[in-house]
Length: 137
Image (cartoon, rainbow, N blue to C red; front, side):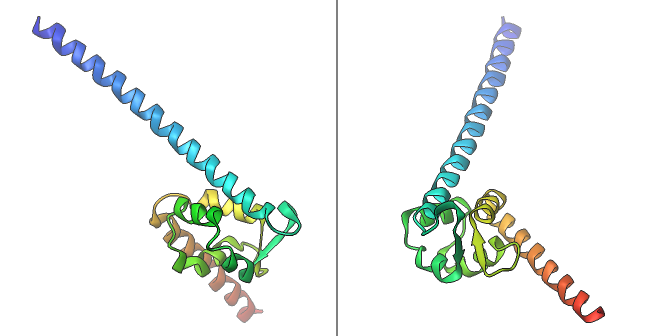
């Protein structure tokens, strides 16, 4: 009887684990879709829609928009760090962020602040690499 009770408890533990894992994956997917939806709404509010580029001034002016607030929460970034975030999203260094750069950056940066730190480090290394190439030329 003890063996059967132990086996049933073990089986219920496995089933609970599988259920919890599937719920967490579903929640993560929903969060990603919500973040992409907010980013699209943000760009559609600009002149030119999804084909528009967002300058730092425009980015800064949108910091109070609900879509931008949701985006910042999703990537776990405080609004005071918006300038650094903009620099990270501007992959080509043009001073403007396209919708593609914004969406790709959003998906790349979601998660804990550690992801943001690593992304900042990668950006800094790229900058140093460009400077080294200029010096050696």
